[in-house]
Length: 341
Image (cartoon, rainbow, N blue to C red):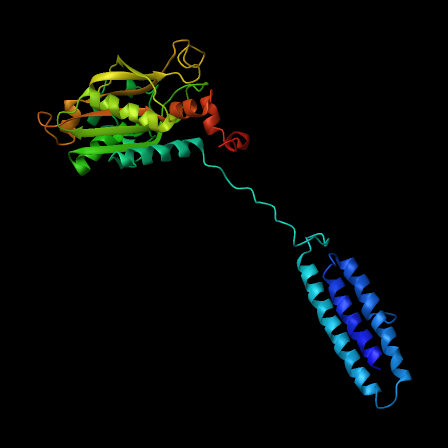
């Protein structure tokens, strides 16, 4: 009888070891038939009880029942495991295989560059402000010394809100200048990134919706050299290298003197290409010293306070940073384009 008990226990241990290698429900069914079926190995061993004495049969029956119960519990646990690993079609798969990484979204290049600029200017002591996209004519034009007959206020450039008197879609983030001065006074360092709107025809370098970043510094004895230093520091932080800039005279009602600030074209390194119209330079930002009338609109005395302002074209900056040659790609929501970032 001892030999039979040893065989039963050995069979049980071997069956459990083999069960660990079972990977599919059909394999599990074959295992169950082999060891627990009516003609299975355990059943065959237990038939030997008829050859034992009356006193030995209960002991062998007890050993057999313990072995059978252990195999049934192992079988049920394995079945639950494999059922949990079935897909919708009912086909089993190996739950021990590494999973598939789910697809995740990508930050838009506007978001990436805006966050970099916000971080850069914050380290330089600038506040970051947001403002309304639907704006009053006063803050969009009048407070910025833009007279009523200025071409920028013509319907060809500005979107006016129907049936809403004196409301427009802001044409520039400069609408935040006087708001910021009125709210925080002077001295002041602030940037205002955001979306702006112009009634323009769309092509590779122009769109009716684009992004700007307004910069405004108010203090005492502010000069053009402060403006140049700030812009070059910003460009170095974005492009991770020194970038040449140049200033050309420009007229903007809210600054005096005003400048067009250009940067070396990074597509051709200043040699001339289609992006820079063969000039080697790309127009980057209108800028200048804050006009005394703007300071007055904010409640400051221009005899005491001075400052500089610039309206950075984020769309062009993004295009230069990532080598994008068509502004329309930035707003088309094409996943093939966005997944590159």
